[in-house]
Amino acid sequence: MYLLDTNIFLEILLEQEKSEECENLLKNIKNSNDLFYASSFTLHSIEVVMIRENRADLLFDFLSFILASKIIRLDTNTKI
Image (cartoon, rainbow, N blue to C red):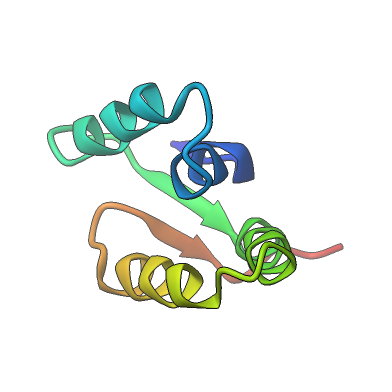
């Protein structure tokens, strides 16, 4: 089981230096038998950054991808 960090997604969304590596990671998840999770805090952090960057359109696309994705599970039981 693996927890995907906020920065993996932000690298791609903001087209940063390691975005290609992060995209390859997400593509490879499809072929993996391992479980991958993204916490609700991760999603919230991405929402904050993308709204701050005035990229609500891209945020909507990202959240739609996450909801439709069968490769990434959301951890909704995170307790702070």
